[in-house]
Every structure is written in structure tokens, then in C-alpha cells.
Length: 204
Length: 204
Image (tube, rainbow over all chains, first blue to last red; front, side):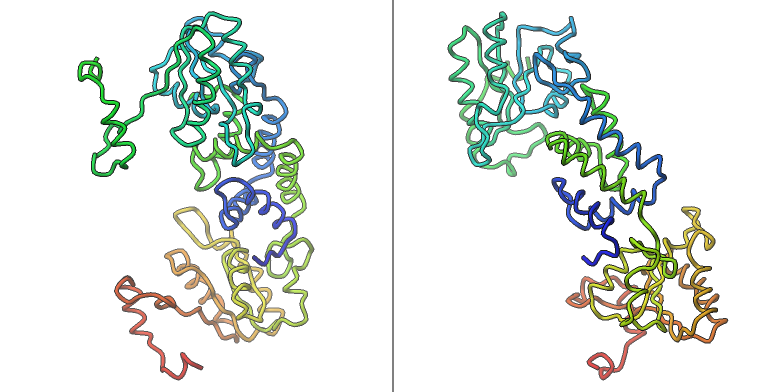
């Protein structure tokens, strides 16, 4: 790209570093912001600076929070005996949106991925062990992605957790609701037959 | 979306205002930035603030520039008698990338669009008229999009420009290079037959 301005090029470079944003999209976004008023652009940059400077992580579950303990961990309505382990805050939001879960969470902050140089020590696994050691936890639900990294992390956590007197479960895998059989991949379909459930359980 | 943090929600709101960025993408981008170091985030926001505060527009052609006159208008190699009129700086970059044009530009900063409330007075049309009045311009090339707004702007400019002793041309429309006939829309195909050119001109 032939930029007519170094300042423009720098801003486009910065936007282009974001995941999934190519150079052309970056240019479109920067030119859009350039057309906005000074107030709007400074509100944009301020919101990011504010977030970066003032964000906290819940001291119990490590979810993103504005306070030292997040709303979910503070809530008296939540079942503190059940912990759902997730990769990041997006998964907490996704599960909260289902309105199906009343327990609390534990945010690992990633998945074990030797390819990316992320080992167990880089995740909040010690914090989870501390919670099991200090409190009476009855069940740990591992709600991690059905990928190689997710499975590796589940395997590692399962070995760590079985030392404690706690039920460890993983979320169900199978064909999605609304999914048509002919479009389901063989691995999912094969596993969903092998792990079939009695009809009474599915309607219950 | 159930945000666990107001700061996070504000930053996602700001990103979600950008064109083509939905809430889910905005969240992904914000969480990516949150994982970066303080230096990287402040470099990101600084590049935008710098751009917004220090950007200039060339006093001749209104292209984005770091100085009062842009590089193209300053260059002694460019043909100052030919002006190519474009919508915005992206079009200048696209035409520069072709290496086919040696003249100078005039950036309108938009197209006439009654639907969006953009009239001729909102564009840099007076500046173009001034250039024709003050200098010896031999040709004005209207390189605008082949949309309703582009055509409206071309029609308006043509009526303004014909008062001057200047050749007004528009860029060629027709089927794109590599385009297969059966996939070309009827209007383009019909017009490309009506405006056919002698074979000698196309290879010349």
C-alpha cells in the first residue's frame, strides 16, 4: 500500500495487528475513526486505556471483574459447591446466556498448548486446586473446547482433580440441536452413537 | 451479552461502533488487546490520537497528508495539467498501485448522496473549481464508483466543469479482466456492448 501519510500508516499498522483484521479492513476502520469527532475518537481510546489500567480479575475465579471479587462469586444465589472450569471470560458469558447453570466458575485464562508454548503453569490451575483444598466442592465441570488443546487440558486437570473427593464431569458432546445427520462429521457421529443416552434422560 | 465488567462492556461498545464489527468480534478484539502488554496497548491508542491530532489535508488536492502539501502535489515528475477526481484517499492508493497514472488528484471526501444528507456543499467541489479557474488544466478524469451516488456526482461535476475549456472524461466501465461473460450482470454486459471499442484501441 502506498500511504500518503506516515501517521495514517502507523494507525493502520496497529489495527492490522488485531486478530482477523487485514490491512484493507484496518484502513477502512482508521478512515472511519478519522471522520469522527475528536470527542468520539478520544472516547474510543479512553475506553481502552481505562480497561487496561483499571481491570481486575476476581481473586476467586479469575474472571474479568471491576471489583476484587466478581458478581457471580459474590452472589448468595449461586451454588458454591459446583465449579465450572472454562477457558476464558467469553465462555462464562456464553454459559450465563443459557440460564442453565447456577454454580460458580473458574477461568483458566487459556488451554494447555505445547505448540504455542503454553504449559500448565501459565494457567490458573493452582488457584483451582486451592479452591478444592480449602472449600467443600462437590463437583467440577470441565467445560472446555472439543479441540486437541481442550482435551489435553481436560486430561491434565482430571489427573490433578482425582486426588480430591470430588465428582469430575465434562459437558456432553454430540450432534448439535438442529443439526442434520448427513452434515455431521464422522468422529462426532461415531462418538454420539457410542455415548448414546436412554431416551428418558434426554427428555427429563 | 452478560458482561462481568462495566469497563469491558464500554470498550466492547466502542469497538462495536466501527463499521462491519459486530459485538462478538468487538469482544474478541478487546480481549486480545487486554492480553497485550501496557506498552502495546498505549502504542495502539497513541497511534490513533496522533493521527487524529496531527493529520493534515493537502491544501491543493485535499488528500490525507503529513504536510500542508502532499507528496504527489509536490512532485516535479507528476503532470499537473491532468486532475483525477476521486471519492477518498483509498481510491488514490488504489490508482497509485496501478502505476498507470502520472497526473495529480482531487479528493472530494465523499459522494453526493441525498439519502445520507450529503450535498455538493459537503464535498471539496469548490476547491476543484478554484484549481480550474487558477491553473491551466487540460483534462479532468472522474474516477468515481459506478453506483447511484457516483453517477449523481459525475452528472453534477460534469455540468459544473463544462463551463471551463477542459476535457472531462470518466474511467472506462465494462467487464473486468478475467471476468467470465456468463457471470456478468445484464446492465454491465449491455453497456459494454453499446460502448464497444475498436480492437486496435484495446491492444494499443
